[in-house]
Image (tube, rainbow, N blue to C red; front, side, top):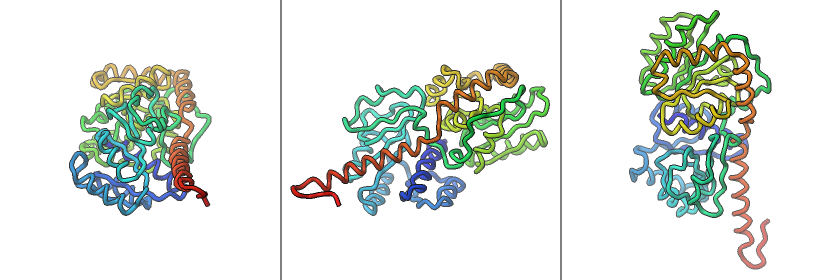
Amino acid sequence: MGTGHLMRCLALAQCCADHGVGVTFVTACDNPVLLQRLSGEGFHVVRIKRPYPDSSDWDTTEAVLQKNPGAWVVMDGYHFDTAYQYQIHSMGSRCAVIDDYGHAKEYWADIIVNQNLGADEQWYEKRRSETKLMLGPTYALLRREFRSVHQNHREVPAVASQILITVGGGDPDNVSSVVLDTVLDMEIPGLCVDLVVGAANPHLESLRKQAHGHGPRVSLHVAPGNMAELMRRADLCISGAGSTIWELMFMGVPSILVVVADNQRLAANALQKSSAAMTLDVEKYRSSKILFGTVFELAHDNIRRRDMAQKGMDLVDGYGAQRVLHSIKEISDVQEERLFTSGPGQRRP
């Protein structure tokens, strides 16, 4: 749970690093694979024992800010409420909130980023007048590996035989197992499946056995570092409807999105309405008949898959992280200008 939040923060952090901006991760994540991913990128990682609203969260964050006065704080998590944002400002720091549905009653953030299609300005009516809103897939935060392999054209075979399954970082209900069995029941010539599971998946060992039982038709990938390549070669994807959807749109992968959490529903439904993806609620994926019919139909409809691929690529251009970083720098420059012109005769050097 929460891996998608960490990955989109990683995307912004990579963009910062590419532009010479230092990054520290302050996180309650305790998964060794994910923590190694952060430190392996060269980022400083500070661990939090217990997340907010536990007071130890703020104690740790405050200590980091005292060592980095004036640093920006980027928050990604539904537990970061109005009070927490206000505390950041009381320290003299600026903050950006990465959000999905307007979870806080009021916003003290300098920037609010909601990368989802259908993000509504009304969700953020109670915000400071100077708060900048960055709404929609134009601001989708993609990791470096995706930005380096973008393609403007995609081959769409008559029948989708290379299928990608990626339900989410945690997948506590083991949706992956149900989807894998359903897909493998299909009589599709040359069918091959790439099954991606997160490092925090509690069903990892049972999924290994399940994949192994199907021989070379199934390749299991645990927290892979080549996700962009797996998407590039996929003819079709069955995916959880978390932040992965924007990577799929960018790569032009025709996708069936399985909504496994309420906070995924708005974005998934908006993509279906725009014909960029298909959506199944969690209740429907449990019906193997409905899931089978949906996947089988799309696998044999190359016209619809071609249209979905193009619509997805039209939505996400891959420059979202750069746009967010540009706004952070822009606001910082304005603040610096104010500091240097605050007194008579003072000028910015």
